[in-house]
Image 1 (tube, rainbow, N blue to C red):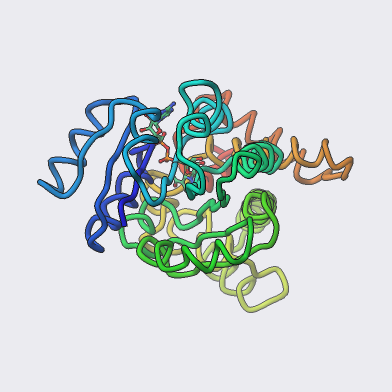
Image 2: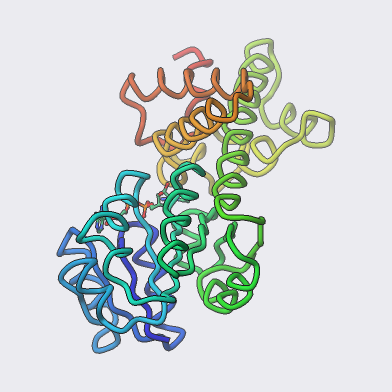
Amino acid sequence: MKIGFIGLGNMGSPMAGNLIKAGHDLVVFDLVEASVNMLLAQHPGKASAAASPRMLAGAGMDLIITMLPASQHVKAVYLGPEGLLANVPQRMALIDSSTIDPQTAREVASLSASQGNVMLDAPVSGGTGGAEAGTLTFMVGGNEADFDRFKNIFSKMGKNIVYCGASGNGQVAKVVNNMLLGISMIGTAEAMSLGVSLGMDPKILAGIINTSSGRCWSSDTYNPYPGVLENIPSSRGYTGGFGADLMLKDLGLAAEAAKLAKQPIPLGSLAQQIYQTFSMQGNGALDFSAIINLFRKK
Ligand code: NAD
């Protein structure tokens, strides 16, 4: 397939790389020229660059994938006279893998459909490690027949490909899961800190939680207490992993979506405020499990 790929950041670059390795012909674009040049250098002769989304839209693609930071960047790439929607030929397939609010995903997909094009929202989880290894989880919203048509493409970048229902539902699944993760990480951090300050050994405490009813992913796979588990951010100074600012972004998306749905999320909102405080103190680049530092004596 001839695939256009826009957004060659931490996630997009390895995802595009996996499509190239699978034998697809890529045309790429990013605002940062150095990112484009790096991808082209990593895969000599296997990809080319477009000068803008408009040029890419007119370059005879079978499919265009976008992987952008947030809603405003998705709107900038898709909408307006220079955007994808105004410039792609009819029946173009578009997949947005950025994490954005479900409402914007639905608006852009509906505009796309009104012009006779196909659009899927397909946010991912699995981080940069999953993007490199081609083991991402894709949560996909849109028409099921379109999902079936592109499942094979998703499988070149991920290994868990889930159809979530109508347009925007991929973003719903992503945002709801990450809200729960933010809440459960704060809960685990609070419980571990309390137990240790009351005299428990952190490893023994984690062992008990992980064989009892308090067990969750934040306690058994990504425990925030340093030294409990090896090879995770809490055991290497909270470097690498999933940044606290990215968690804050996803909690903001959940809050936004909840407001529109008039749905209460008291713990989600509290988690957002806690991460906001943590970020304001200059910790946004640390892994999100570093939130435990709010509860531990220096
Ligand atoms: P990033 O900031 O590293 O990359 C985004 C890229 O988009 C950059 O290269 C930027 O130059 C480019 N860009 C921005 N505006 C553009 C425009 N108008 N036209 C063309 N290119 C433009 O971000 P990332 O870490 O790759 O994340 C991408 C998305 O995936 C985000 O929505 C993020 O929330 C989500 N996500 C990230 C992770 C992670 O661990 N990094 C995990 C899961 C999901």
